Length: 193
Image 1 (cartoon, helix red, strand yellow):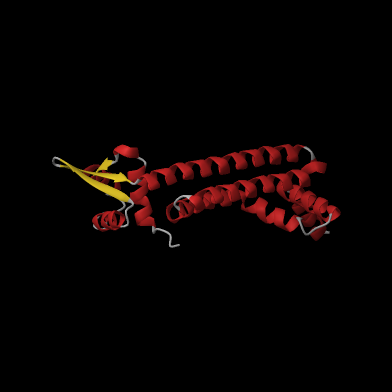
Image 2: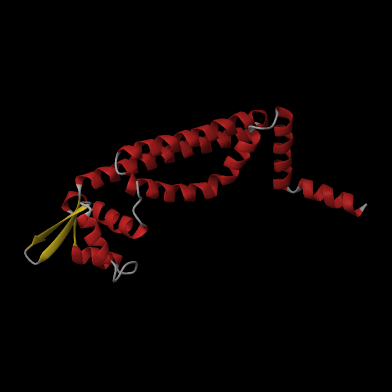
């Protein structure tokens, strides 16, 4: 399986978002002018010959319509994003609850990470059935932004699975002290004496 490059994905998604009515060539060209100029015709030609779009001429107007397969894949992508977003929201709630109860924070962190990873797995499984050449790179792009937020939690969660309960409690206390600055102040006071 070969994924579509970003130019073809951008054009295809722009056409597919218009639904079964499609978009006029002039309107598409106007929307994508800042991004694609000379290569737009080449990309449309590739998409047409790959049977991802249909080109219909109505009088003087040329209309581009995404194939049913592409439109269905876009619906699957929206569903996958919604599942992932729901998993992140559940994880966020669990993390917030875990911060209020120090003793249970490890369990909450573990549950949160399980929820996120489970949602991510379900999202990718949904997309494999449809049109993965288009949807998997799009979901991956979406996940990159989530990783910027969740990266520290994921790394911490993976590290915590290898530690025992006391080590985890000490690490969480250290992180809490580091966040409040008390640990740095104690080290500076020790260095002055």
